[in-house]
Length: 126
Image (cartoon, rainbow, N blue to C red):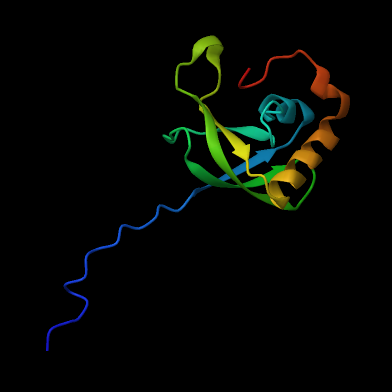
């Protein structure tokens, strides 16, 4: 008896978001990575992997001395290629999703940075 599944067309699999892990150990590193100009906040993630604008990613973010990792879904909105001007680090900017995890991540980052956010120091992106 023929297999009933052999004549069904293949359904393309929806690509799963890439999982990234980012540990930020200092205020200066957090300041350099944070992207406050994005509507829901975001961070720069150093990586050598190739991404495209609009790619969905999932990140586990560790902030300073907090042992808890923040699980955050986001979208690639910035790409710094290898060999970028001013020796900028290669990587991607991830815009947090407008959900509880994204809101919590932005709140925690802004709380840790406090008044440092008004600094004019350069960051990984701008």
